[in-house]
Length: 293
Image (cartoon, rainbow, N blue to C red; front, side, top):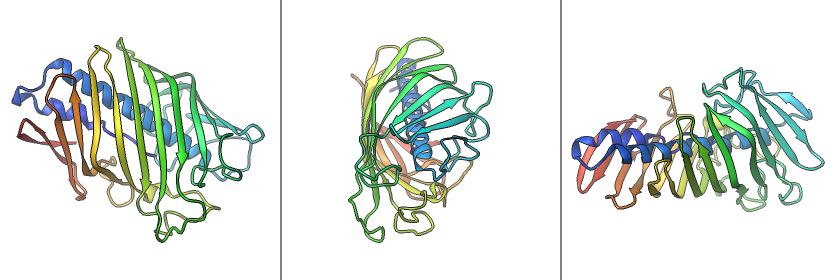
């Protein structure tokens, strides 16, 4: 679910060139962070969709995706309910709904979940996500470690408690254009409108992600393909609204992020206070620039 999480950073830094704070090297660093963030977030979405489904079939073709990734004929899902492993195999001949071409497989192993927790929405659900020759738009994705845990209390009341997940990832991406990105993150994802009965329907029914309001906190760091290290720290919860804000994409509409290439000033990215728009600002050394996402 948490989709193109910080993909605007590359655009942000490009917009700041007139402040003479950004070199082409830095822009490349930001773009690498954005690319890694997007790819890892997509994998979380794919794991959520595949594990939250209600189909009883052991193998079936996805015909639609709550967040617009799986669908058409881009992937086949196989479920091994005995060993609690889900394998999503992609067809390089058919792009997914989001327009990206994928090949290889993503393997979701939820055998470490609490008893009875087999869906992404279930408190105690826990999975590791691995890849097998997984390629996205020509970029080879190698997962060192990726874990997703539903940290919502067992027996929670959706009227007063939101569903939450912890996400930890360590990923290497061999770029189609050359070089390797090393990227890791620690995230907390929150379903901010769990109390809405048209979104969260209880334990027996998948979450309606197309109406979800999502919050994201946490940190990321890594090294770009050209060897520049960086950090990306969420300083105020980033929010996306899949139901009320659809502008052809689902941008962040609220929250702030500090993006810092090593040895360079921090770029403070501000997505606003909740208005459904494509406006944001970036501030470097006290100079603020308005950008369009």
